[in-house]
View 1 (tube, rainbow over the protein chains, first blue to last red):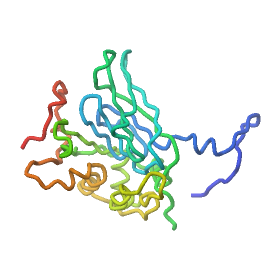
View 2 (view 1 turned 135 degrees about the vertical axis):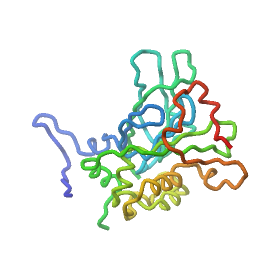
View 3 (view 1 turned 90 degrees about the vertical axis):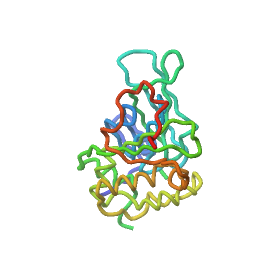
View 4 (view 1 turned 180 degrees about the vertical axis):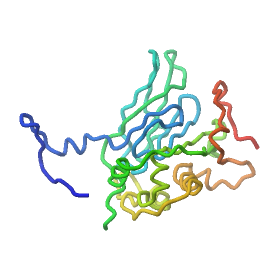
Length: 118
Length: 136
């Protein structure tokens, strides 16, 4: 496999440094129903620790604690999700999910992990 | 070094390998948190495809050593030479060593804290999910 080394990319009108593309690319992603992964990249496994408590270990770790964006997957409103700082690390992404009452609740969810790789 | 970075190999594998649905799940209880419900681990189908294919994943002991490496310091596993193909059973053992807490792997008490089961053994009714424990 070859490598294209350039300092900028352009669509003919707007130019951006390639560091923004490289650093802005997701390093991992997942879409899951409890511990079962519908699709993923750079994820080893899905771990269900209990209701609304999930972890996603990475195959290739990040340099520091993961930076992630996640969202519940539902056909309705009222669910929320947050990054679980009690479980996550440079090599594990982890989330907690809640219903509209603030109680832990299962929901399908998906997320992307950004940042520099180790 | 001709094998490049692990993430590059994963990118290449993504374009040619079909995901493999795993037959097994790993159930474990954390000896450092005995009040917590049992955790259930399911291998990622894309990861399983890489494990069965070979030439992609690093040796599992690189992950074990990297656990003791501080964030921001060079890690071993992204740059290690990949291992060959595994069977699904070997892949599950690899996963246990990589992703289960160290306290589970090193536990030497009388309680069974780790069990590998078929996927069909996991209950679908999650009404009392937070009360699940490994049957002794």
